[in-house]
Length: 161
Image (tube, rainbow, N blue to C red; front, side, top):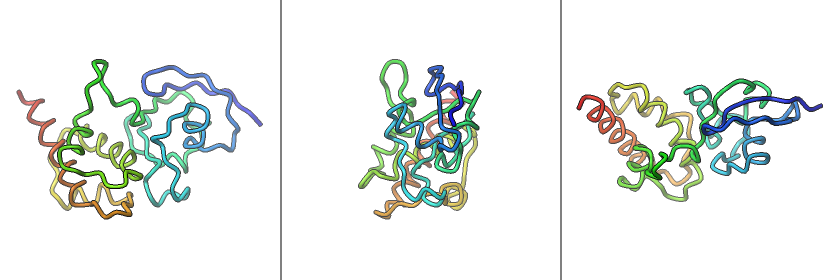
């Protein structure tokens, strides 16, 4: 059975007919072609499908597309600024070499965007906890933590200037 939903994805209003059983991850990938949304475990354990829904990091494989009706969805494809510049989290991931195979990267970046958006400092242990829902099979965790910490600090410095 199909249902019409209205949502905003990466700043663009969308009207979609979706199967009422379809996950948001499937709709984002198949209907909208947003391939940064990875399908890893499909049970909410790996974090590869993480997107922001109304500013909160969510495993989109566990979130039905019909629940997204009226919501704002942000994926990695929507992070770039109007002038083409990268988001501070993306820049930090490049500068800190926080990417290996790249499969987990989009989901971790989306969680990091939520973390940076909180507007506060985190201890290393707090960052580990915040990112604990993500699996990196290449074990690039230290560089990932360095990148998120750098993005937090840079964003806080810019906000205070």
